[in-house]
Image (cartoon, rainbow, N blue to C red):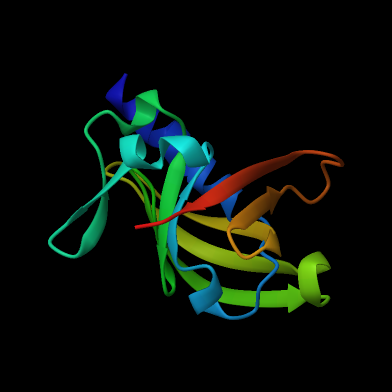
Length: 139
């Protein structure tokens, strides 16, 4: 079961990176949750670092972006390249990331757009209408 959770976490985190609207990495930095009202149940700050709570998976999904690194509960990805297409709230950032779990390595294409400073929408190119919205957590 743990192996399946790691594979699913890697796939979910990978999916997250399919679309990003902002060119500057610092605009994406922070903790992001599928349910902004559950931020305190998903993330805590320990030693100046944002980490997941022991029960984070019970309260929704989330990830942390720190520069060119993205961390999920069981997955860490290094963004190798990014390209932003368009401008403003309609801009989409496509990223290629190298992701690792305890059991596998994979390259993942992620795309996101940022319609507002504290909202990130992951889009899935080729899957019209499929998207996932995340809210930035104040940490």
